[in-house]
Structures are given as C-alpha cells and as structure tokens.
Amino acid sequence: MLGFETIGNATITVFDDKPVLTTDPWIYGKPYFGSWIHAYKIPNQQLENIKNSKFIWLSHGHPDHIDPDSLDIFKDKTFLVADHFGDRIFNDLSKEFKCIKIKSNQWFNISENIRIKSFADWNQDSCLIIEIDKKDIIFNLNDGSALGWSAEIKKIISKYKS
Image (cartoon, rainbow, N blue to C red; front, top):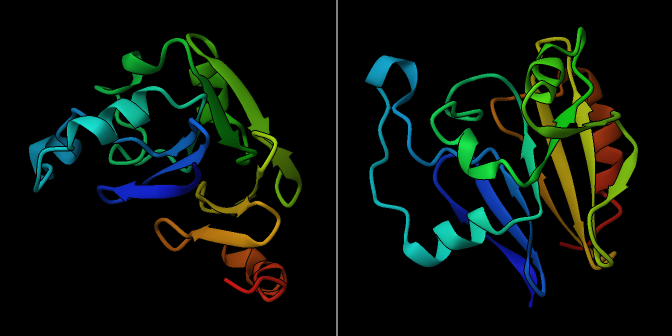
C-alpha cells in the first residue's frame, strides 16, 4: 500500500508497503500541564502503524508535537528533526535517540516512493512536504510554521496535481 492516514492533531503516518514515517506522534501524554487530552482513543491499528514507522518526524518543541511521555516507545526508531536555529531539539534528543537533522528545502528520501522536504523558520517551528510516488504531496503546516518560506513552498506545491 502506498498512501497515508491521519490521527490526532498533527500525526500523519505514511506507507510504502509498510509504515515508513509518522509525524509528531502524541500518544500518551497530557500536554500543557494536563489541559489537553485526546478526545478519542487512538484505534489499535493506527497505534501499531505509528509504533512500526521507520522514521518519526518532529516539527517543533510544543508538547503536543514532541510528547515526552510518548518518546520511549520510539527507542529503536530514527527521529527526523528540522535544522532549527541553535539545534536545541536535535542536540537534546541525540543524547538518547538516533536522530537525523533535515536541512531546510532539501529532499530527503525515506523510501523508494516517498521523500520529504522540511522548512524550519525563525520561530523554532517547521513544516513538511511529503511527496508520494513523485506525483502527490501532503503539506503538513503544523502551527503556522515556515513563515519565511511561503513563496518557495507555494512554488513547490504548484507543481503537483494533488
């Protein structure tokens, strides 16, 4: 299967026969001192897909995007982190996890049919373009990130049909 599914406020799981990428997995925690909770239980199959993803992309440091209570279930995965100014998130996570820093506006292949392009902004946020089979894209904007990249992102998106 080549495609994707979404769950929660920022989580996308992308498939190339198997789960290869999950974005911002908030699974267990109660971010912002318990003021946010999941409205629904994550279905078992989607939870398994998240747990079985090869790569975990983290957009920024808000606890509903990098959930400290969920990180340990990804000990054997590779975190993909945008090249934020100062690299605080990358440096902190690299102490315990395998991490790859994704340079802004450069394609990074995650499987034979899927590649991503990340855009970090001045506000320590990032967004992601996920290209599937060189013809379709998903644009993961997150919390209004990539302000300085909007012209470049629009140019890239305009080249795709869907």
